Length: 412
Image 1: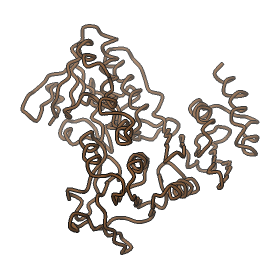
Image 2: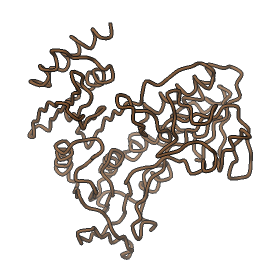
Image 3: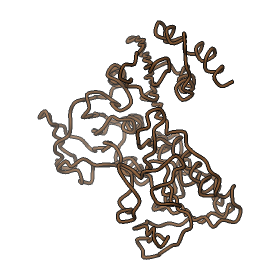
Image 4: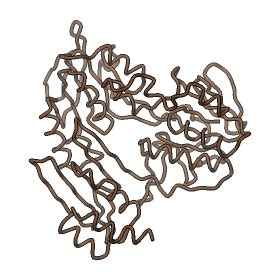
């Protein structure tokens, strides 16, 4: 049984079917639509796809052909002792192996007025419909949050032609992905595109103003807007696990096999708190490629095929109004580690490499899209650079040469 029919749940179900032709597979989702990708919603809002374009599998009979039962319902509780789950409608379902892939939900800050009708999220297809109905050319829109998800939402909103202001409580944009130099560069780029950015500020009050909203910031500034988008982050969906005995911190704690603290129960995706590659810390890494790989590993183990995740790898690529940025691994650097930096403010190009000894362990990149694959290969491959570290410190743009000299040799 799989709880959650997003990308992780779907990949796990399909993997299980490939491994076991006779297993009974139930995939539970609490939204009325077919399984879809939340990461496709911005493209829907930009008019590049229709709702069907967000669906994870395009054939209407895909799951039926694979004999995967799609069940519309919400799980209220898991009884690990009896091996069953209870749905909110009272139905009780037994399982032999269980995967929890329930994803995350948007967090709304405790601001007076946050529940007013014109305060919207951008997380579900229902949210997308509400935004499409509310925001068009010339609409006055305030977005709270300029993190990774917030910047993706901002791009989809900007394409609709509103007067857009973004408020970010951090001292820079995407503060959990980019350093101060990179965050400031992304902000300048957005401002040249007509988006007003306010960093180091927060919304402290929202009130009706006729058909509009009056929004107050913590510096006393007041703005009148037609809609407010809350994009202040997400948290794993774990409330239904209370009393189950499954260990939860920020997310569900899992080992390298994606198994939880209870034997036979696994977790994957935005709900899982896995061991981070390179540091050994536990992190929730809410990106789709990592989610589906975790799901694949979990499914292998559920089917009796031992497999382990080498570690969840922090890797983000972001397109912000046409400016491509990326962060890898321990981009902040490590104690005692060295760093190399290359900056071209006029051309919006930035590259910063972080080293631990002679290994590259993290990077920030803006505009240098040609190096994304090489950066990931060097960091995730834990390649010892030897004399190439000195050369990269002198000229970070020699990454491809370093990979050809050391990375491919390491693979061989």
